[in-house]
Length: 427
Image (cartoon, rainbow, N blue to C red; front, side):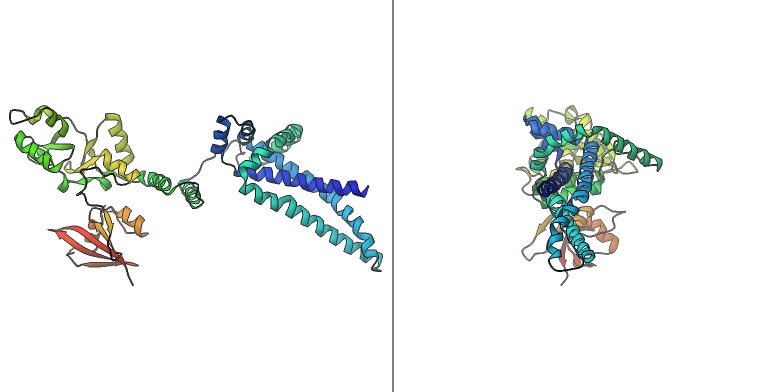
């Protein structure tokens, strides 16, 4: 009889381990991975997918199983171990009352230790580390247990939901599983640190979050650097400028950059072998003019919808602020895109041999903040050169501004425009 009871105690501990491991495995397992296995014909994955889609019911099944086995261990385990230990303590000649108390305490400790360590902690740790394999292995028996105990599970879930609604809360089924941007960023960081995603994948997704907060003004080519052609120029002059600059598209102005009449594509002019007998007006295509503070995502959607590669950005007074291209927008997601004609193009930031950083004056303040982990105020300006001028309006080459723990120094200026800024960490 005692052997049977010991066997039942072992079975109850194993059953507890089964329900605990099942609970943590089905919560931890990646749904996308299970869906992939299911699509490849894995029958066990089909069962796990069924459990995930009905997670509330199966978590209740696990909780019911753990409760039943815990009650069983409490009812059977302590008396069984106590019966084994009572004769041992009786040999020490202890009074019967004291012998019973000590035997009960030791029995309680042994059963609690076995229950917590073998029945809960160890299975939990293994299930978290091997969620996929554990869930595939235990899905079938868990489904059968759910079917057998369904009336009790339905009653318990219904009662719990009733009390939840009484306090004004939603049930699990009524809630939508959503994650905030902060939660997604945390998940992304954890996945990167655990090696589940590559550094490039991490950067792409992180840039997507930043992309949503950017405006067109932050990434535009400013008016002063826009290469244009004049509608009144001869075709020979225009062709020579194209050969020198090597851009694919050029805004066309009527004497002033505030009066942009359209855009031309270099390949059309060279394909038609244009000369002074041709006129630029025959090749001008319309170009949209968009307010500079438009969200970058909205600008991209508009350019995709209208099948255009360039947009003119205007300020609040209707003047031209600059231009934005599809390439400029995509670089905010995938990083710098350089073709064979970009060899002379300056990078927004380069590392010098002495370890300092040389920033292009057009580099956005947001990018500077992200790289150096700073919080430079940029409500009124968008570029690092503009920020320097807001800090020191009479800035000149050699001017230094301290932003703990860094020093910013103006390295190169052109008239009143700051072209290069050096940054290094203070000693």
